[in-house]
Length: 130
Image (cartoon, rainbow, N blue to C red; front, side):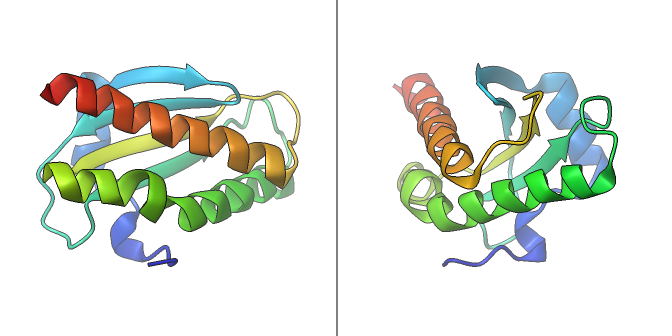
């Protein structure tokens, strides 16, 4: 389960447009999470897109470094914090992770904050279903 396959990445332009027009968002610094429930035809319960602003990080190597750190943190923690909850609730989800920080964060900080963001994401959908 500790993989991050192509089917787990949100690539569809229609779904991206739907996510940003109808999705709900919240902030867990340095992340802004936008999410929306969606019926997916893939075997994974969630699809994600990871974005880092070109305005804040002019050099592609900096953006790619941050995206690699976020992807790794997501890959290692998705099963425990997200997939178990989505499987339990029979829910499919599309969401985006935007890095809104102004400086390049170290991996332990990114991982800790991503865990908090995934926990808040599952809490928001558990409250909606009750």
